[in-house]
Amino acid sequence: MKKLQLKNDSVENRFSVQTKCIDAIIIKDGFSGFEINHKPFKGACCGCTSKTCASYSEEEIYSEIFSAFPKNPSKRVCPTDAITFKNGYAYIDSNLCIKCGLCVHRCPYAAIQFSLENNTCSINTARNSIFIKQSEIEQTKDILDLKTKPRKILIDNIPFTFADTLSKKLETYSNRYPDLSEIVVRNTLLNLGICCNTNAAGNNHNRIEFFAECEDYFIIGESQISNADTLSVTRRILDDLAVLISRYQFEKDKLIPLAVVNGFPNKRTDFYEVIEDINNVIKVQVVTLSYHALFVLNLFKPHISVRHFKSFVINRTKDSLLSPMKRIIEKLEDIDENTNGIHYTPIK
Ligand code: SF4
Ligand code: SF4
Image 1: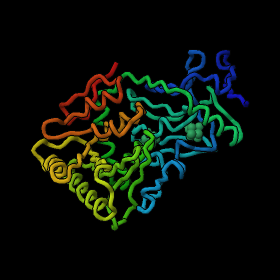
Image 2: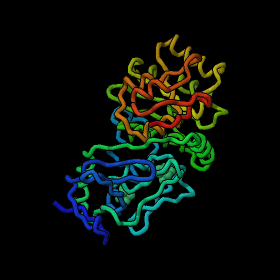
Image 3: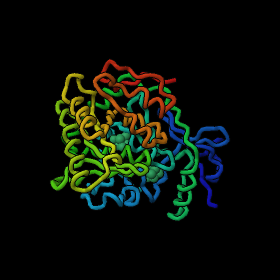
Image 4: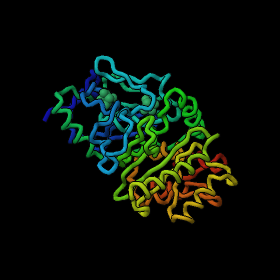
């Protein structure tokens, strides 16, 4: 087997190791890398041929069930195209980067360094850690090996201001990237192992914004970055359900309608009324996630099942995702509910 080479003159880094020697991939604030014999080594970009940091493969976004639905052909990982390449090595344009974290788990060599504390995301190009310079076939095998390594997510603090920052960045960039919201939702679900596609721009035949397969259920839904138009989300979901059930004969019991919003609406608004109406009339429960909840799910990369998904229920009396999120990510300690339920307090 080819060796992973640590390219550095220091004694510590004059070290070569086979992928089987890597015990775990570590992700913590400002540090991504490998654990070898209980010692952490920062990952670095090796200019790999797969470039999984930049795009999903056709297989990752292929959906048999929804193959007839026109879909957004973009396979980009980064919603704002902040990742570029020079001589094959990846770089992140910090002006474009919205710190969504979607790229972080995509690099098999843990080269992407993401810090919530410092609000930064960059590629380690120092090449002073483990990196691989091999043929495509050898890289593919190493990537497969690396995928089997356990992940240690050691994020122990989500700064209180982070949700605000993310929320504002999404709003700032939504005009510049018209499909920003769909890409964030799609990529989060893809990163969680749920095959998701988004609608093609301008497709008026059916307007379902995103559709995904999870076990033998279908997650369909709508999202809205601007808080000014959150109410339209549930109305569009009602429209989606009508189209899928009446035109395409989907079984309603197999549908999980998902509303993604930037902040939970005021309890007196129609948002909750439409959710209640849908449940009362056709007995389908709409579930709701905030972009920040999606961000946290992506960061901790938990195993998520239909049972988990169905528990993201908010209504007039319950507008917190604390319990379902804690069931999925045990490390979460608390959520501040003063600001629309989207702030998480630091975790231990
Ligand atoms: S950042 Fe990672 S996935 Fe992207 S080119 Fe470098 S090694 Fe490959
Ligand atoms: S953190 Fe998000 S915006 Fe920044 S480079 Fe990664 S995917 Fe792009």
